Amino acid sequence: MESDAEESLKKRQKKNSFAADSSRKPLELIPFRPYQVMGEVNFIQEEDVRLESTRARFSNVLKRHGALAERLARDSDKMIFERLQKEFEAVRASQTREVYLDGEEWNDGLLATIRERVHMEADRKAMPADPNTVPSNHAEENITYRAGNKVICCLEGARIGIQYETSFAGEPCELYHCVLESKSFLEKMTVLEHTIPFFLPIREAENDLLSSNAMRFIDYIGELLQAYVDRREQVRLIKELYGNQIGELFHSLPYHMIEFVLDDFDCKVTVSLRYADLILVLPTRVRVFAWPINQFKKNGAFGSQPSPARLPYAEDALRTMSLPEAYAEIVLNLPRAIQQIFQDMSPT
Image 1 (tube, rainbow, N blue to C red):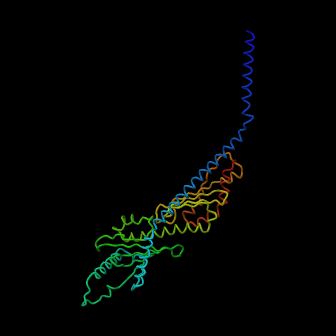
Image 2 (cartoon, rainbow, N blue to C red; image 1 turned 60 degrees about the horizontal axis):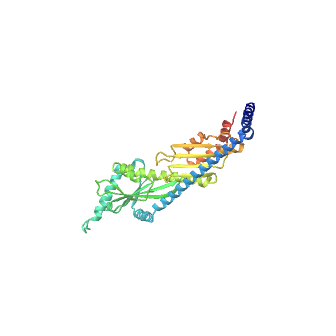
Image 3 (tube, rainbow, N blue to C red; image 1 turned 60 degrees about the vertical axis):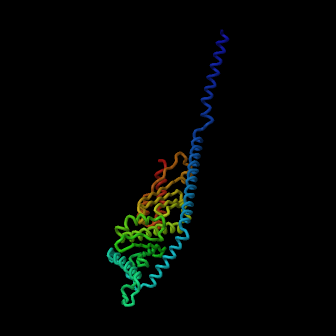
């Protein structure tokens, strides 16, 4: 009986001794801080993996966009451009005079006169020649009209041709063409053919404007093309001037969505631009964030993942200046802005 009690007591003491040792062991052998640092490093590595995956997907989309644009720019489109360009050049070479329209001189009444002229000329050429008819100098007069960046002329077959001349920073860029046709003077006009990029909404503009306000349609297409060229050339210029500082740059085909990253600084700066309307050359929605990850790694501050900070001065510059001018302004003031961010984020 006593031996059983002694044996039971020894077992309980042995069990309590093991429990005490096991409670001390985690505190001695598994330090808390190294575990936290390792977890933070793993978190940052996982973030890097996700960023790389996103970057790869964006690159894939860009390649597919490029292939699509190349497929859609078929030889037939180039042939249309060359044919229309030759036709416009022939008309300009044979013109009897060119009329420069200023301000309100380009109006609906003048467009109606041009429409009437092309139909009268088509009817005259369709009639059999009469040797007793006295030739009319007015009927054979070939006039072209210039209004802003548009040259408007009468083409064979009761067609009205508009040639759009685009430019950037005072230098000429591409020429685009749009040919309008109507069966008679009283019928509405339609777009017969054009050389305008497929991603610009010419068909939507035709449906919304051409039948009700042909002059507004002609002007709107000119604004659309010039704004597209302006946005595109702004992006080309910052790539040309600051390509070594830009790590990534993405844009839509009409350049109404633009995103790029600045990597050549202590912070990673992300810029996102959106244009609410395709006739705008300044963005309507701007977001600029600075991610001070590199500085935090350098200082060994792994306690928490740093949050991005918005750069209001950069957003204001992008809303009010052209992209190259705004970029220069951002870079000039970025060191001071980054220093302020670090001061605000440093523990007190």
